Image (cartoon, rainbow, N blue to C red; front, side, top):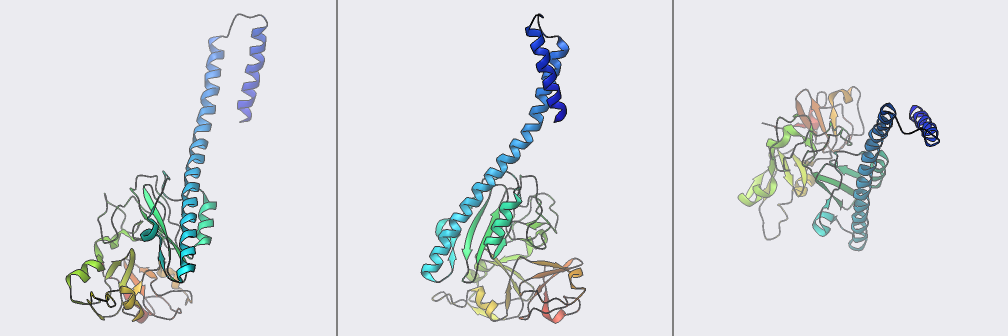
Length: 309
């Protein structure tokens, strides 16, 4: 930048001398001016593009906060759970790059919500939920046409442009099986193994939870942990709700956290039911009610192996 300033100063002095008596600029001088302009343009375009993307993200964050305010206001009035997507609709994201370019906005939203599921993506959407205990921010969808991202949730390894749905939709191209699908917040290897609970209920008068099976239900992921039978009572829908199976310890609701086997070199006390752990090429879900565990390899009775076949 100092070099550019010096060149501009020299050219200014040269121009003043030309104005005093000479006839014009030489070809060399004109080429220098063109070169200076090119350098300035090359410097300014990336800066402008970066600021424009941050402005888009600021718009997305403002829209998310607006829905957060609506949801929390309704939660106070009704003292119940509120699904912002069902009540107000999903928020279409304006950003043109996957992930966050503005770390400050990301940190601010992470501190506002008790949990953030998924990550922002090009052509994606977001919505806010209050589940009775905490505010949850959901990111969904995305065309995968952006520049890629690194995950901002614990255990995420970033997405690779996957466009599969949350009921086991396919991946485009040869997606990394360990990369995170933004629709499910699970590795791509889970796509074909995920079963729609709504479809199961529609086809069966009763159904027994299969330990190790992956289910999608109302935008969430559940894992079977114990063989319990749920009845298809359409008059009350009481037994159709997978959250009942969670209460019975027959299923675990995915938290979005994925541990590695190396995280359990020592016993941990911060593991929650519904956390996953990867051991070699296998995944396990923590199914116990307590939070003290030595991991799937040492405390196998507390963990259920996920069936991805």
